[in-house]
Length: 82
Length: 473
Image 1 (cartoon, each protein chain N blue to C red):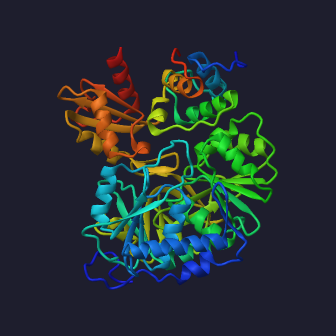
Image 2: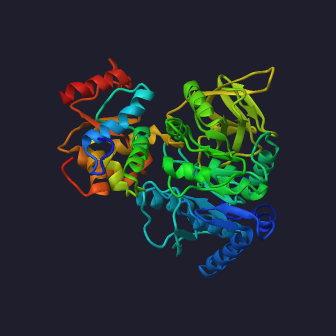
Image 3: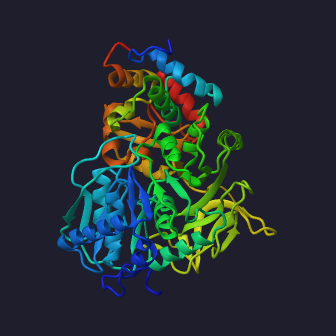
């Protein structure tokens, strides 16, 4: 799935964040902290080959897995079924 | 300097004239790189830009001894207006561009600048580290000439009530620049510094921008404050490169599995709290760099450093800084009070400034180890947030009965409400009044806040967490 160029889904977000969480021994939760978010943005940029530019409202929606998936889907793929 | 602690309506002293700006900051060969803000800026073009800003400030009515507030995001606009206003002999107060309009209005009412300089169009871009702005100069009705000799005015989160107003004279800033030059291992001419610390706060402003201009160390600011943006900035030059940032940035960089080849990258220095040992190891080994720490405060600038992380967690006081520890609190020598207006008089007395930081001094080495805050301040991404301010703002929201705000994996707020107010309304109240970095990660609405047997609000993390869990279930 990591080779897909389709819009990111919730599962993609979980996958992108899990490596970081394993490294810092942090449990899987729905909430993302600011470091996890920074990491997720980095992973998403690499995986989808984009430079993200977010406004404050988008960014503030990204502090949950579901919200992050929605915002990334809008920015990267324009799909809304995350 | 008598009288500095009192705001007097009679102007007895004026901010310094601008010679120091030319001599210490702008001087240098025309072609020498001064800054790298997405593109190279050499000294000749920086001087030309500063002169242009000076004409704009004069046209807007600023004269020597005048006062101006800057509310500009990190940008060449910010740097050029700041230097131009100083060059004119003005007093410059810095407002963080992330402050809400409400916070800016409060600051302006307090500082009474003659001019407010802000971007001519709204800026956006939450991941940007650098902006492209055209300054707009807004004369303020009721603005006053500088009332003190300070060239630089900054607001700092106060431990209770409104923020403190901190003033620094040009002489004080110059002595900090001299201190930087005498710190062993600090970047020098021929090196470059990638600066992630905000240039409106003391570490980024003096340690990054002003030291860089003074010592010939170009300040490189990445376009975006993302991992990719930081790595690109680090890769952008072969000169020995120092990264100046905060621990959270070190944390994310350390997680990069295969960092690109960064031949110039030599060291990272973080301000704020010490990074944990595991992270220190991951970052230093992963990038083949050293990771050091700096301790400073708005009132004084840089205080103590461990540039290459050799004495973790101890820090060597910067040359000329007197440190002592009294009752577990770190005290610093400062000739006069840095505070303007009314302030808790115990903050500065008899030449000593109370830091409210806990610490220890090793008499054998003279090094100091900082052990955290003695009050309610926390550091969020390197920015100081006073939890009391957040709590008071929340408690004033319509329908909110009581509030407890504490730090527990981010800022957490617990409130009880008397009327029918939803989290959305509380959220928009906070949005209007508090900059984003000060706002709670979560606002938990509880039917009643847990209290002690004597009726005081309980501040126990575990108890509040479990009360919130019970409410949600």
